[in-house]
Length: 349
Ligand SMILES: Nc1ncnc2c1ncn2[C@@H]1O[C@H](COP(=O)(O)OP(=O)(O)OP(=O)(O)O)[C@@H](O)[C@H]1O
Ligand SMILES: [Mg+2]
Image 1 (spheres, rainbow, N blue to C red):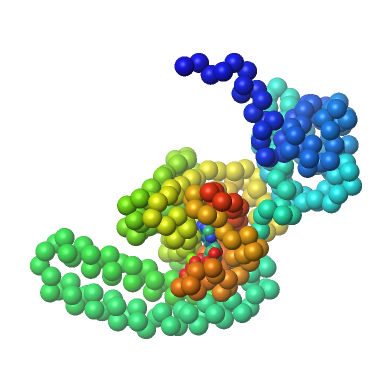
Image 2 (cartoon, rainbow, N blue to C red; image 1 turned 60 degrees about the vertical axis):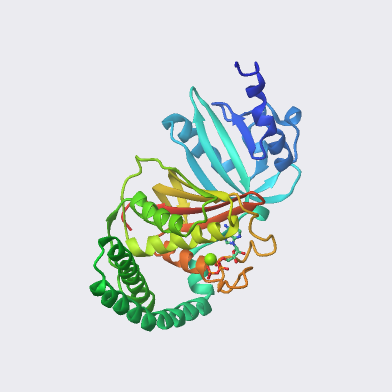
């Protein structure tokens, strides 16, 4: 069946993201209703005027856009503070995508309300308590873990069937991984064991582990960008970080739902004041009920939990581990769509 004629042309009108189209002379050509609402100006008033008329704070940004158009390279500018046409102060992430020949599309996402960014320095410098808790927990884990591994080894010797031995191998393998992780947590000043790895190696391992825990009604969908270059990192730490996020997704969807693992790359991306040429973006999305709104600003802090049996450590640990790789975890959540995004720099860190 043919698509209804012309309908797709109206799509920007329905987007909740603010979209602005500018021409090679850096004048506004089009803005969608979300952009009108965000900048407090109607298309009629602003179309044809220079981009800088849209909001104060965009002046310095124009050179970067002109460069992006000239070099046909997209980029994202994070946390830009602007004063809108109708004089409101907002903070936005702006993604600039050149549209040859000579135009550019600006997608603006307002951060003030929707997004909670928890950064390495805020976690580590402002939150010493968390590190104490993590160290305490690491000590608690260490001893029973040794017992668990030893018992699995004894059991393995008694087993004859290879299929049963596969299970003890998993126990021993996972105990070793946790042991390495705990050692890392206890020794904050020691250099972790880094090696070159592909993020899909990590994700596939996490997927296997989550799949094994998932009820039959939960689907795990993969949408990988196979061209993502390798990075230098600590395998066990990255598994733990992504596992903590994925387990939350699993708990959120309950017995029936979909969890999606998506990978992409992004150029020119700023994380904790450092501009990276290339970063990996790993989205773990679920269609569960969403993060309770009263918790969304705090979920990366320790002991923040909505689950009776939760310790509220999964996300702060994940954030710390990702921060050690120069990366960052962010979350956007609404009913039916929660996305945890892990950003990891792809140059050697
Ligand atoms: N995918 C998600 N959907 C809905 N809520 C979530 C999701 N991920 C995290 N949360 C919320 O964030 C809280 C904190 O998560 P975190 O992983 O830090 O702790 P926890 O899961 O409660 O306990 P644990 O230490 O066992 O991981 C959760 O209790 C939950 O309220
Ligand atoms: Mg958790």
